[in-house]
Amino acid sequence: MLQNFGNSHKYTDEEKRRFNLWSFHSQVDNLFKLSEKLDYTTYLQRHLWKLKCEIERQASLLDKNNQSK
Image 1 (cartoon, rainbow, N blue to C red):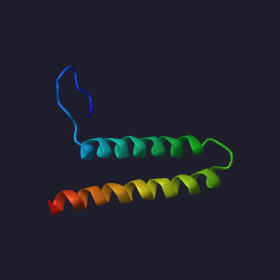
Image 2: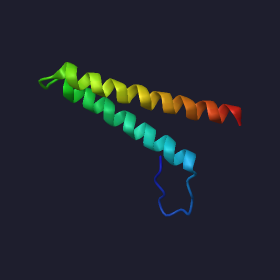
Image 3: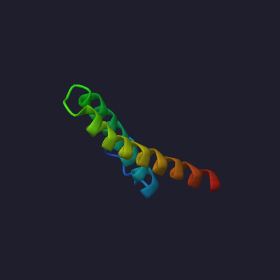
Image 4: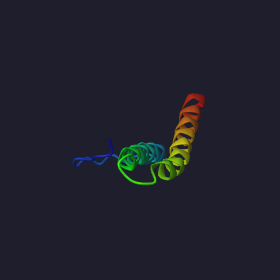
């Protein structure tokens, strides 16, 4: 997504933010999968769930800002 391959393309702040949210979301999903195999699964998933909800909230705000432009 943010690979340049020698081109001189400059990414906007919105593109960078969208990529960061996407990568953070995928990392939280990976942690959910890992937590299923560990002790204290409920404790870990309860905290990860808060992060996941916040990521989705911020992504929806980005989408709303794009629609209003």
